[in-house]
Image (tube, rainbow, N blue to C red; front, side):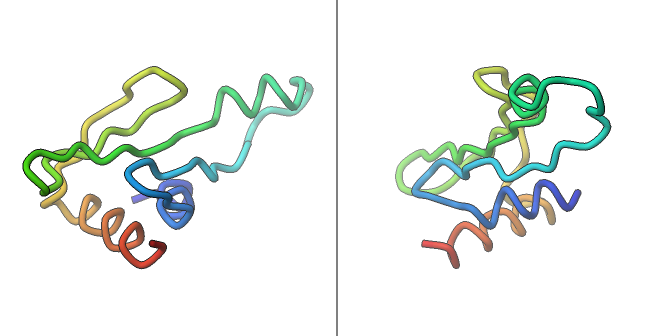
Amino acid sequence: MSEEAVKAAEAAEETVIEPNASVAGTEGAPAEEAANAEDVSYQAVEKEGSVTAIWEMQGQKHLRTIDPRSNEGKQILALFETAG
């Protein structure tokens, strides 16, 4: 799991884990545009009270789905639970 994902997971609030990604390799680009390109958030998808999936999002674009039973999914959920 990347450091950006861990940092983003540490900023958890309710079911949406707020972005906390670093902006790397954006020299010469406007700060606002670079920040929008790097904003990554995580959303827990719940069904009947249990998390069935974790969505990695960039703005409104779905990047990938993470299995909550995987090592990465467990790390994100553990950080989310301790932040709440």
